[in-house]
Length: 336
Image (cartoon, rainbow, N blue to C red; front, side, top):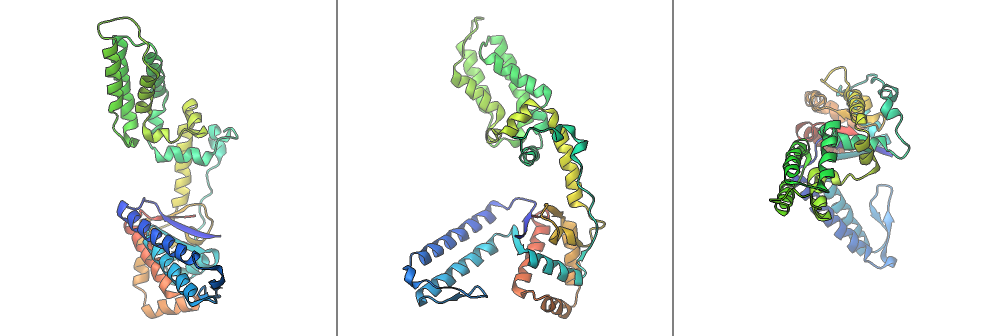
């Protein structure tokens, strides 16, 4: 148990690559240690330092710890404290006037959103809300109008005349506008499939039976590769109950306001650092305000507060670096 702090923004590809490289080195160090004969193995003391075992084992264990430390430092988008550590850090920051204490508003009541209150047991509200939040235009894509267009298009795939093919291309283009913001690949498959169908029946008003492959291409191109990753009970429920989307968005927005709440932005707030693990959002403004106060404080006072709080200076300095980067690059951080 403890507190996990994560940037709001996703880390860059370069930051991910550096972490992945460090993680690989850690894995190799662990493999080398584990390959030693069991008779050589020792343990760790109260300070988590290698003890007992052979010289080779202690050296291998030290290499694992060094690799783990290097990997942790490359994971710049996160920081972790145990429950006691979180409270110690919040207390030290309080003594340094970096944090304040306030009562957060109550979380929104689901009773205000009857569509969410009546979700079937198999629907995970958190997973459903995440789906909606990760794709902010989902409401447009799954609105009544868009769903009718999609249903109409797919029904016409079974029997396409040239005139219907033109209408299908038009409808596909309209749906694409709603889906384009969260597509990861091109959407040319729709045009290709529609053109292929047109060529098949060119010069004829007779209804034709496009292949299942063509139907699949049209469906995949319209729904998009990203959305296809969410073929879950929650996704299916949203396609059948688009009215839930607006209520879920409203509930998420109200919850987000609670998680971001602060009386002022000149400091951080105790409950967002060492309160509950509800995803409290520490904004860049709050973090920057706390850091300004910290850097205006006499270094001797800082050293005394840390010593009195029994906080290791090296790890505290990493915390300050994390705060700096969270404010500058991370869009703030959330506490879980």
